[in-house]
Image (cartoon, rainbow, N blue to C red; front, side, top):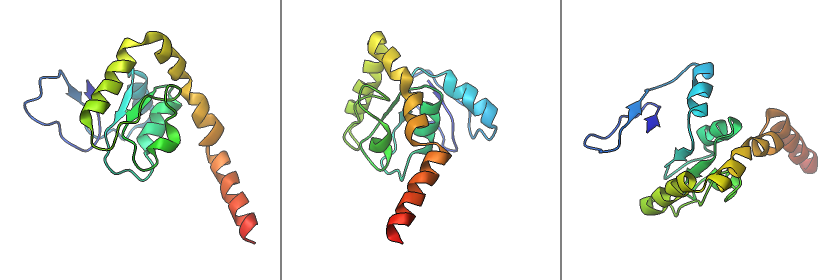
Length: 137
């Protein structure tokens, strides 16, 4: 498993792991995302989930909990798989295993970049804000 971010890896895990720490270089970050088969966002509280969107923009399906803005991004079987009930790690682990075992469906999910381009570009978000402002005027 490969991880990155400002946290630390818990001691005593039997899963082979490489933790890269905080990655500030965007080019390196896109290379890291593209090395993944699936991106796991185990956040229990998440306002939006920028890292999930970044992974999807690299064509990497996402698995996470049904919390915050994550359900707005993950379409089951299209841009990720099974949003687990918040805090249910067994459900999260089953979703990760599913991505590993179902190659045909996984390849279909790798088209998740289209979801980002259709709904989450800066231009798209700016247009949505403009429409809100127009309705308020």
